[in-house]
Length: 113
Length: 114
Image (cartoon, rainbow over the protein chains, first blue to last red):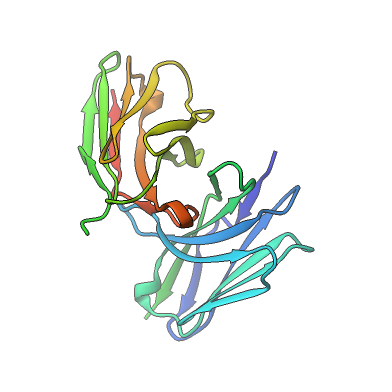
């Protein structure tokens, strides 16, 4: 079965630096890959979606890359701010016929002022 | 739009009791999803509906769990009887017909079964 691996250890960085989070998956490549943000006590919030035929997607300070050869996605936050502190979840769509997302366990990001 | 609405936000019950969680999706969305989140297993899809019809319930843990969507603006997830291992945060999410991948989550219901 498909496995999604995100670094379970928290990532601590200084304000202004670029945060880079990793999502690795096994087996076959997904049709779509998404990143969500989750704050404590709240539901996940959609950030970015990238398709298998796209290499990179940007939105403001966010950038996602998708390498189907490495079976990896990288999520970057440039000029990070304390307000970016949250847990970031990677989600895959395995089969476009089944409207289901498979989520990684998430990586907690802590941006220090 | 108020977003996805879930109730109650917190529920504490005793083992063996029936628990009903409620969800109001975003108006106009065709898809509704129920997820469960725990520290051990992360965020798992339980069931999803398309136009009020259950499409895939393969994630429902066992027969104690059931979900309904009687109309486009309301869904319930019921656990009967509840067990301590059902303790988790249950999320409802909805998405529009032509962009189902982008799911809008509710605030969740934190369930504790004693």
